[in-house]
Length: 310
Image (cartoon, rainbow, N blue to C red; front, side, top):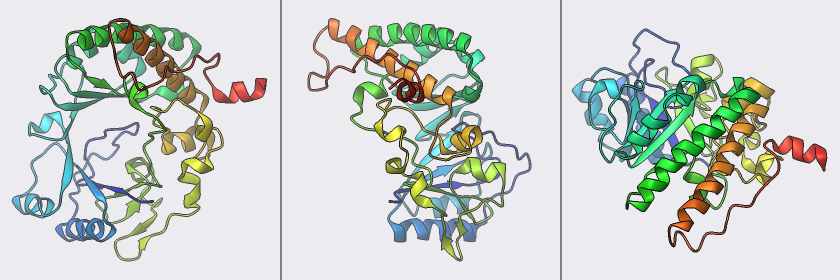
């Protein structure tokens, strides 16, 4: 059931997920489309996320946006307060006690374990998005495993010292009791500057014709059951609950929106296993989430391989 809507305020609105923004010309959503999008959200009782470009919007846009409860996703270059700040690189200074996203290639990420640890000492939450996870190799897996262990040591130290930062790739799995994926096409939909709906921003930037309705005719998601977890035969039985299960990346790598590629699964299970180790290490320091069971040990990184063995 639909619960959220993302509104891209401009063609150059910042990306906070796997997709890149390939449009360089500014195209601000019309005030009429913005107001109608807000009205649609009100009627459907949807939670709104506004995604901003790196320039200040006209005053009348802020007035319209402030007519409804919402969260703001803002590039750090804009230099304004936000619910989520998208950092513009590894030299950025994240906000104290804020929520931030860093989009990065795997190669750059592996060089910045210490930086992630420093950021977590400042932030309430950090989301890491690996923009080229579909190209992860076996050699990369070993390096990513070492990276997660190093960051886990920093998180353990912070927890012992009384801080409890959240990192999507390590602490989410410790807290979750079920899958917590992005929900694009199922619980979430996107309104683009052209007044049309898309499964998520990635589908808009890849192909503007790939829409799922508009403000005039409403939503029309074909085979929408395929975006639901209960129609994903592998994912619904998986316990890498922190995995984003990106439907755009799924389609890109397997041609099926409900079937992740090998690399996405492997990365998620490396994170799951690192979360298991981190939970055990924190519990050696004292009582921690006593109501949560241990994360079970597994002997695979790709559920498809486990099914094949069975």
